[in-house]
Length: 320
Image (cartoon, rainbow, N blue to C red; front, side, top):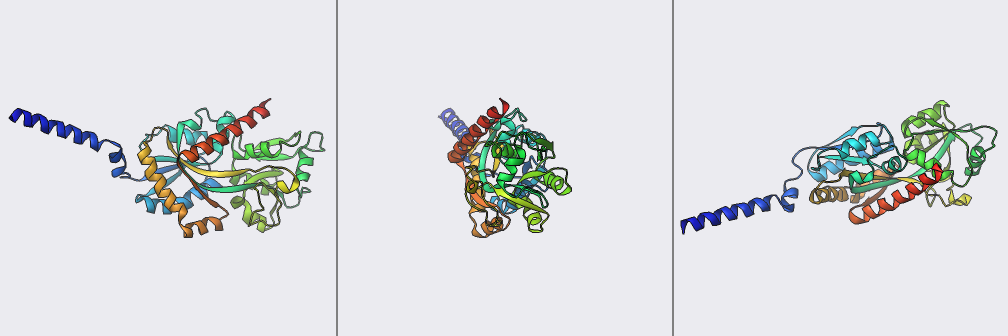
């Protein structure tokens, strides 16, 4: 009898141990230490600004501190790979945008987006093209005339190879047979400096990166690539108004390493949903020209997969 009781106690202990290592346990005490968020872009760019803006209220809702770290290079490849190789325990994340998809489709990032698991989309920004204030380009049609093969001069376009601004130009120039000089300026922040300094003729940016310079008259936007005019730039026409169905923008998404337990991803997504759904914080985002656009779960995965297929198709067309 005594042996039977001992065996039963041992079995109960084993079952309890299994319970404590199951799905509920993975989420119960998580997070127990600070979260690191890798931004695979330079400091001061749109992704860095958006991530730091979101990080503070997200940390409060998560109940744990959040440290944002910039690891730039390779069209997001270096930082994204660092995040993908991290322990899949929910304590290292990555925050980026469509550049994760473009860098893979265009060969800059060999790991591919499947090496990371989407946690949540937090916001969206429309892209635009901007030129120097004294440029003769005043419209999208002027831009197309300037980039066409056979034009008098080749415009210098600032890009980071394989990144979002590179893809944006390729998409925007699809309607014409183009011939331009791509200048490796880097992301939005460095490209803006290059445009202001005159080392490039045209740059593509999100509104938040350049709105102050546009308002100051230092550069001018000649087209935005959303379905409607941007509320902060009501005088700048859309590509659709010129007869071109071109929508280009940045969807800001947070990721975890691909093998991170779903239970922990859910904890992160819950905290992010609470952050983005807060009306006061939404107002803060809009004041910075960022549209709150929360998404999570299977819907987000499906959306990202569709975006990736579109980008791969364009990359193949350009490579022909």
